[in-house]
Amino acid sequence: MIGKAGDWAFTKRFRRGGFGWRASRLASERIVEALAEIRAVARHDPLHAAEGAVLFLVKLSPALEQVDSSSGALGSAARGAVDVLVPVIAQAPADEAMREGWLEQLFEAIQNDDPPYLELLDERWGDLCATPVVASRWADRLMALVRHVHAARCRGQHAFTRAESACYSALFAAGRHDELIALIGGDSRPMWHDVLWVGRCKVARGEIDEAIEFMTQSVNAWTPMAGLARFAEGVLLQAGRRSEAYEKHALDANRATTYLATFRLIAGKYPEIDADRLLTDLIATMPGEEGKWFATAKTLKRFDLAARLAWKSPCDPKTLIRAARDNFEKNPSFAAEVALAALHWICQGRGYELTSLDVQTAYRLATEAGQALGQSERVGLRIQTMLRPTTREVRWVREMLNLTALPEAGPS
Image (cartoon, rainbow, N blue to C red; front, side, top):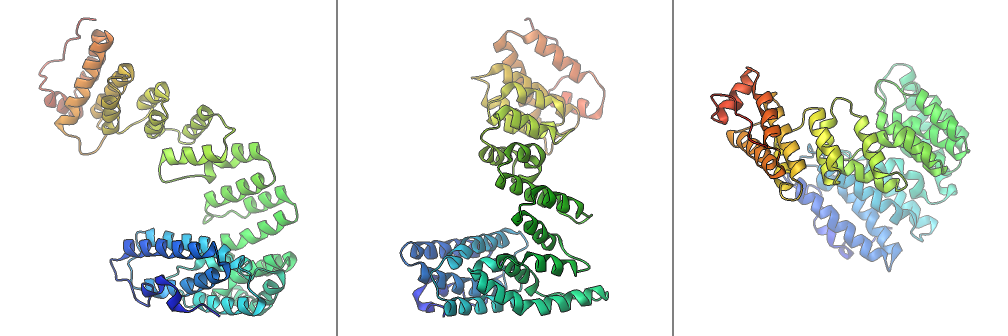
């Protein structure tokens, strides 16, 4: 049985159609609040917390059905909620009858999940079953439907069921690996996340290299290559083969929203890898776009490397100008180099929405840093070289600097 709705504050907010079209951010915030409420209860009453988790997941999709989720943020919040709540339900000290009641309600919620916010729940069905006996019973219940769908696909028909992933997960949790592999083999068009179950079965048998080889051979034009790298990396890490995991897969498997976040993600996972080596390895994955790593190298205080990257490939002039300004006092040599690089890329027509102020600031920072270093003549000669071509971009730069003739190099 699911706990009484009145026991939980989140039920007042998660009603069918409870969030409007523009409420994506509000709904995401309410999800975070609900998770906090359930976690707080789990610390002293794990059974009641599991009841609340089931209740929340049942209410989630109906409450969000009217929300514009095109940004992806709400979907991420919902997936995060599933990740948090599955262990709460799986580890709860429920008897078999209570757990079956939870599973029935969750399975119905999955079938009615539109838009699909509970997709990850299918994949974790074996965990929710909690015991091999329960998992095996659910596998038996779902296999006939899955085989029927596979047979229809083999006849060239379009067929689909939300029971598919749940069945695979249940078979895996029940330890029925041969049956799982055979069932997936009967599908004429298995998806990548389906084939992953075969790889997991091989890993469970201790066939590490065979699992990676099988998954590699399963790649096609629609395969998410990062997914293959994540699988292989995870398998190797689990086997204690850390060096191999890093060298072969880590750089492809771990990508965050920014370059700096990517560096920190991998550095946290592989503390034994020297930071300079990691940064160099990451830069090498993007030949011809090395300049995009400039800000990361600067933030990590690898100033010599950052200065080289500023010239290696096109780099945003505004980013370079900010770096020159921020480091003018403490590191005038670096400031001079990146200010010159900013001026260079502006002359090459790189950058977006540049103004006369950007040009003048890059020029001023370069010349003033050159003076501070006693290298005015050297800096002036480099600027002269940049402004010598007669391209449209260079003419615009000279116009922004009010230069009708090339500037003379100052005394050194």
